[in-house]
Length: 259
Ligand code: G3P
Ligand code: MG
Image (cartoon, rainbow, N blue to C red; front, side):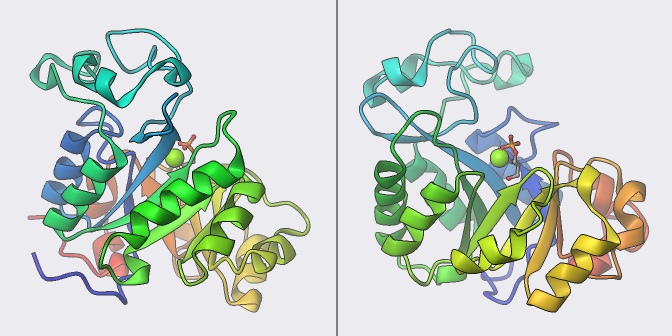
């Protein structure tokens, strides 16, 4: 694996890690993404009741673990008892729910890049922004090693105040009419959009504004292939091999095609 290249555009991004073949938002899914050959992962960050940041999508652990309960009722000390792997498959039994620090440590070791999506649930924007900004500031990393995104503009605005140089992406499911102005107000570098709302119009707006445009969560390369050469900058997928094995995508992403 070559050392991190800060010019790497992150064109094929593993959604919640390689979340088809491994349990989503786990260290196993991050390792699997790197093994599959991509250099970027997307993952979600939520807060526990004791304000510890963890890698998790939902407000509860019901869907992905063998336990139940709200994150607000969990503390860091409870993480050891949570099995995030068994619901995916027996080989991942006992896979833990990672802390943000554990995730960043692994990203460091794997020499990969990350799109860190902040999930506010009901947490105050300032708390989340402060906690994530502090965790990133503790790392001696190039700023563009981590692209921070959120559907919450208050969270992004609070984060931007605390991390002026960190790349940010605004998340919207469909583009608001004023999305460029909203992105610029946050000094965002990109819009991340639901692929079902990708159009030539929004790509043209992105190009004119000098903003990157990536889509989630796309698991069919054919659907977005028409946009590949007209400004699409990235795809966020549950299963990177779908793209790596399809004609032209690995080259587009600057990655090695798989044998
Ligand atoms: O960051 C892209 C995508 O992950 C946003 O939606 O719900 O999968 O976090 P979600
Ligand atoms: Mg996400």
